[in-house]
Image 1 (cartoon, rainbow, N blue to C red):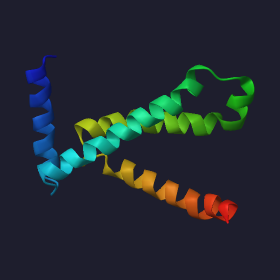
Image 2 (image 1 turned 45 degrees about the vertical axis):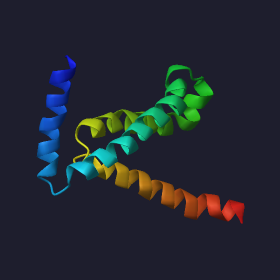
Image 3 (image 1 turned 90 degrees about the horizontal axis):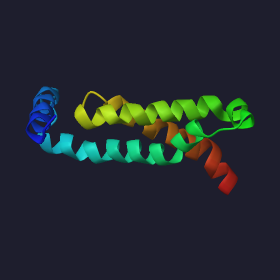
Amino acid sequence: MDMTTTSAFAAAHDRQDAGAGLSLLRLNLLRPLYLLLFVGLGLVVWPYVFQHSEATAAQSGVRISLMAGLGLTAALGLVQPARMLPLLIFEVVWKTIYLTAFALPLWL
């Protein structure tokens, strides 16, 4: 795919997402969040997917797999930001729960 085809493909998806009530500016502001999620989880979680021990797989294999899948799914948000908005909502919710129920009590 050349650059013209790629930009036409993204523009077509932007028009579809803009029909959902979001302006093009807001759609383009969502993309860096998906990119951050994709790259961040790619750098942190995927090394454990490729190099893990039996102990790691037994203790936290499900958590690692879930986070790796979440990171890959975030790549879809680069193409269709409005349709993948529930992914960002999920991120905010689980991090809020973790911070209020686990991290804050430990810190206090």
